[in-house]
Amino acid sequence: MSTEPRILLTNDDGIDAPGIATLRTELTALGDVTVVAPDANQSGVGRTRTHTARVRDHPWGYRLSGTPADCVAYGLRGLDADFDVVVSGVNNGPNAGNYVVGRSGTVGAGIEAAFLGTPALAISAYHSTDFFLSPPEEYDFARPARIATRLVSRALDAGVYDDVDLLNVNAPVDAPSPPVILTEPYHDYEQHVEPADPAELDDGALGTDGGESADGELADDERIVHLHDRTWPGVVGWENPFPATEEHRERYPVGTDRRAMVDAEVSVSPLSVTHASPDSAALAEVVETVDVD
Image 1 (cartoon, rainbow, N blue to C red):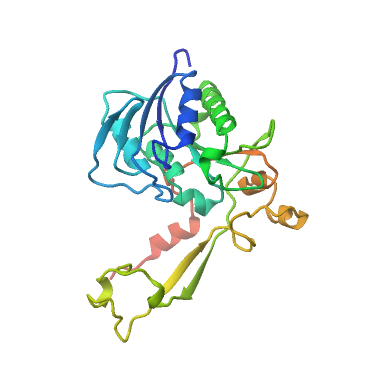
Image 2 (image 1 turned 90 degrees about the vertical axis):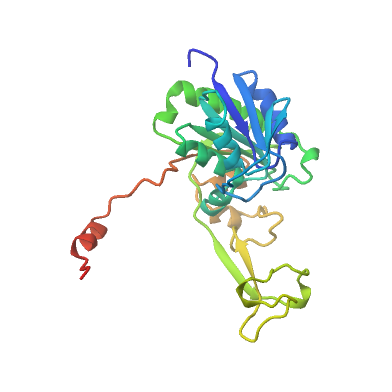
């Protein structure tokens, strides 16, 4: 770009999270940065939107009592400013795999931007052995922030966003000079459902909807179940799904975001997020032959 880009910066960990502070510092060397970020942690909300939000001034821009997608909507349509790109992160923990990407608030901010016609980059940080960065204050987000800044600059200059809506990036905080590779989200998800003991639930956890009585007692035809997302199916030890075994490494094909993480690489997944319709000759034939009488 011939001029400095105008950058809208958000996240899903909240405006006080260390990742967004580090990323803002890096991005200010590239262009004009305005922050619109959630008041509090909004991890896992995807592209959820709310109807009403409180906006407060912040030294970096604005803090908003809503989701990352709310922040992007406010930034792109509520401010008297035009932005060249939306950057979301640095997220505390990875966002890899097609199901996780769909649920991520970090990525959800980028999806909202794409629907509003502005290109985006979502950057998430991981540790090649610790996996999650907990507590985040004990980790250095500088490398993921630098990588995101360089990718934003080069993607804008090279016209990448003529064909791509969103770049989803996962970068290690611990690997020195990690290679940067082009990837696609790995398709891997399962759900585990098991009976739950109502006595173990917090009071009022289920509310009074669906036939449950106001005193919390279940009707004869009711039961309680736990539904657990298995976003890394078959991996023993959710807290660290990177056991150092060749068998585990081979589980994820080269070129997928999860394999890149196993190998402590930077994964860059280009995404089209506007739900374009695929061609389907079979569906066209079905539509032509449906009898509505």
